Each structure stands twice: as structure tokens, then as C-alpha cells.
Image (cartoon, rainbow, N blue to C red; front, side, top):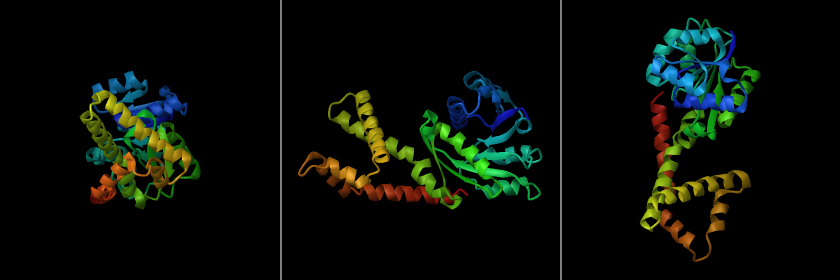
Length: 269
């Protein structure tokens, strides 16, 4: 094997991972190979990412020790059928396929093979190198393998090891939650537009406020409730807004939405 990393599938999330790896210096583009079924997708990957490309998933396995599986769930069975006979015990497979547990890969590869498998749950901010990713592994993954995976994942954001039984909760709190935040930003901007602010400016104010508020939580170490109280002056504008949010069930709505997300994630197993 001559290349460091292989990718089966090279869509948006795989491209984000590859870009982070190269940007962080973990690997060079010419040390990476990616497979895609269409010539158009291969040309795009070769042009934008400057990686080696192929139409053969099995060839990726022949060239790299660490293999990322980055395909849609509906084509996963086809992909596993193509690669299961070529998989070797020393190889490490890293899946970002949503909703598919490690046990499924172990079953498809077969009990006669001792395949190392790591599962990731990234989110879309990985596209700009600021993602949040949960990581879990099977028992065959060594501590060295785990550190390799964490090093790779941290090249496009933050990462933490999480037990696999919590991955449905991870889906609700980070995997799907960018959608909730985008809805919040959109609603804030709509209100600002209603107040007379130009829309482009409204989006900048709303988005920067969300980003800065999140960073304040992370950097200060203070409880979010304390930070909220800092903004709420007696009889002021902020507490008036907070009262309305409480009346409308803001926190309960968020919690109910996340619970619905978690339940739906369980149903997709």
C-alpha cells in the first residue's frame, strides 16, 4: 500500500474531511485516493482536491490502510458487497454513514474477519473546519488507531469519544442541530427586517451574534443561564424578550424537537 488514506465516496462531507486533513498537514493531497462512480464526480475531486481518483472501491482498499466510508445509506449495502472480500484485518474503516451501527459493518464483513471499525457523527460546520464530531469504535481498534482517527477529525473541528448508545442523542444535539440554529438566525433576521434593517445586514448581525454567544459559552466556562442573566437588566429590553420566549415555550419546543430527532434516529437503525 502506497497511500495513507482512502475515501469511498467524495461528496460534500468527504471533501470537507479531505480539505481539513490537507490544511492541517496530516497528509498531502497526493497521499489520498478517493473513489466515485461517475466521471464528473471524479474530475471534480481531482480538480478541487488534487487527490488520486478511481472508479473502483476495491482499488481504494488495495492502496490505503485507513478507509473512510462516505456514501449515502441507500447505497451502503452495494458498497460493502464490493469491498468485503478485499478487506484486510490490519485495515481501519471509518464510517460517516448516518444511522448505521458498528455491528452492521461487522456482520457484513463476516465473523471470520477481524476488521477495525470507527464510526463518526460529524455535522455540516465541518465544511468550514469548525465541526463537532462524535467518535466511537469497536473493540479491535487500538489506542493508536483511535488517536489517528481523532487527529484526522480534529483537522476539521472538535471531536470527542462518545459511547455508541448515545449516538442518537448526538444526532439531536449536534448532527441535526445546525438546522435549528439556521432557523433561529433566519427568524432573528426576519424580525430585524421587519424593524427596518436591510436583509443582508440583518443576517450578518444575527449570525455573528449566534457565533459570538456560542464562543462566549465555550471560552468563559460559565453556565449559559449566568450569561443570559448578564444581559437581562432589571425592567430592561432583554428580559421583556425572554418573558415572551418563555410564554411561547421556547425551551420546551427545542427540547421536544430534539427528542423527536433522537426518536427518529433510533427508528432508522
